[in-house]
Length: 424
Ligand SMILES: *Cc1c(COP(=O)(O)O)cnc(C)c1O
Image 1 (cartoon, rainbow, N blue to C red):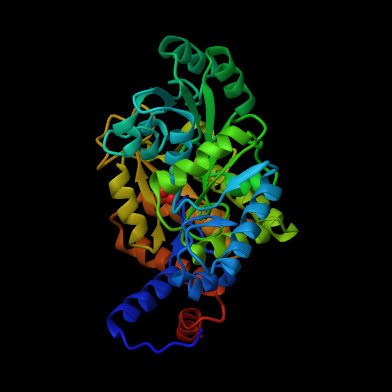
Image 2: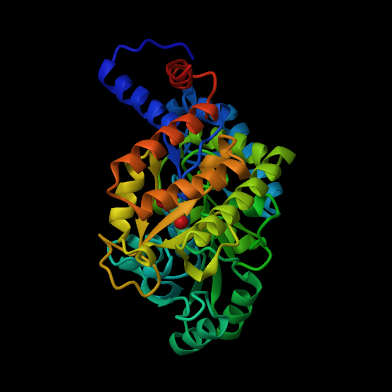
């Protein structure tokens, strides 16, 4: 859509952010670079439309075209993940998880989820999140030895606290999650199973992680992480009654009008994720994650749980005498963006932490390959071995800039052209 840029202040910030994304390499495991088509759908007149309710049952007139969009998004989500029902209205992953919780439990009920400091998520019972305010959360973690979830320990905890809902899924767990084993425990203790696949939904879409849909009563997700859609969420189920409760929990339970422009972008994202190209992309994400973990390990950095099965890893930077905040800042200084992260049984407070979380979804979206990733691993190790060494910093920053310029995210956008021109 043609528009004038009269608001110079806001457009300047947007342009700077576009340049920042092109110039830096994004290693934040929860971020990605959506396609230009996904982004374009969000900047359309669909933002003008009120569509409270669901397709065919709206509280507003004039919904015939947004109905088409929502039905497309719903059908594509169902086909992609093999579910009978889908709700594509959640504004975010947190809203999706909250809606699913509201469908499966009553306020005050006990919910068992992964603890936040072992890789869970704030929507899994943080005391200041609605989940933690309205439900009584109990938590399981990983084991001290192998730093993995022990299904025996989850079972013991479930037998002890008798939850109404068990939640599987997290935001910093680098290993494959056994949904069948979670479902068996849920059945044994009479709990419902909610899988929050926010981080791994792209892997599931590509058939490169087991699909939770056949095992769970409900599956919540974000759309903007490995799935590479717009910033939003959705919920799946195979159970007609649960689906009714999910629909009611999302609208009117916890949201008003749906963001139809974002739902259009979700529909486009689901279509992209069903392609052979997307499957090849996810395979490259996993290869790059394994190569990055191996390279860092060879350079003496301890990888939590000894490696990764998915798109992310936790690097224990105490193994080279650093804290997470220092490592994050040192990498930021060379245009590598990541976040400090608690590691299991961390002795540092969250503001320092002993780890950094690294993920490969975003760098892989801009075409970074196995050889690039190996070099990147060595640059990270070089910086973390000498975080105060200005000459190391200058060299790595130059190498990062060269690689970023060679792998533009949006090659036809002004930000990418400016960076390419500056390096030519
Ligand atoms: C990212 C994430 C979410 C959703 O996050 P939003 O920022 O609300 O979209 C939910 N659960 C888990 C496990 C996550 O990692």
